[in-house]
Image 1 (tube, rainbow, N blue to C red):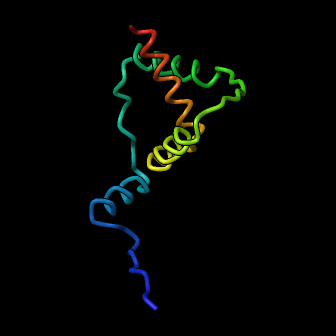
Image 2: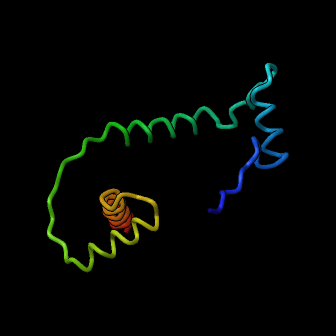
Length: 98
C-alpha cells in the first residue's frame, strides 16, 4: 500500500512568509488601488448581476449537443446548466454589440 506524500505546513518559503505576514499583529492590508468611480462601476455591476431574477425554462436539445455541453462543462469545472446559461448570455451580449 502506497502512502500519499505528506505536505508540510507550507508549500514553500514564499507561502510561509506570506501567511506569517498576514497572521502577524502588525499586518496592514495594502490600500485600495481602485478609483472611487471604478469601484462604484464594479459595485453597480455586482448589484445588477445579483439582483437580476431568474426564470426556469425547459428546452429540447439533441442528445449529441447535450453530451458535448456536459463534456465541456465538466472540463471547465462547471455544472452543465451554468455552462449553458453562460453560453446564452455570451451569445446575447455579442448579438447586442453587433
